[in-house]
Length: 122
Image (cartoon, rainbow, N blue to C red; front, side, top):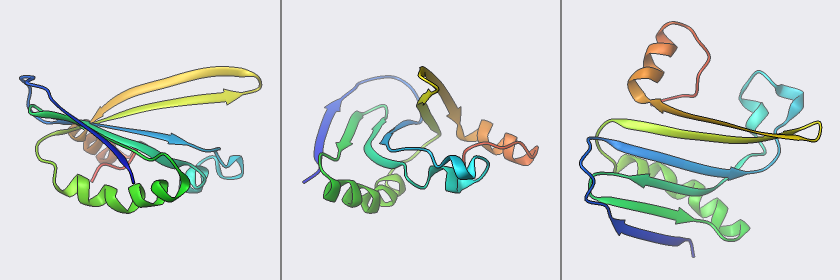
């Protein structure tokens, strides 16, 4: 069973911040298309709104698949403007580097319209 943690926030802001944590290896054979991420698996999904912080955490392989199936339903129940939190830990040639970004839905759509490569925001 997926672990769930819910806390009231009482924070005064509009919208929803979404955070997804994952495990796995990048497929180096396909660096420039979506197959680069085919072995990455979501293990934690969290979001924060004006009302609450809600975290879902898979603790075993079966729960990883369950969380994958459950995620679209969780997203469909959210409202407001979205900000996607992206944090990638890259381990290459013995060095470790974090890449962190917050991408708003509006910013993401603007980049897509200008033809820049960016994560999908639907």
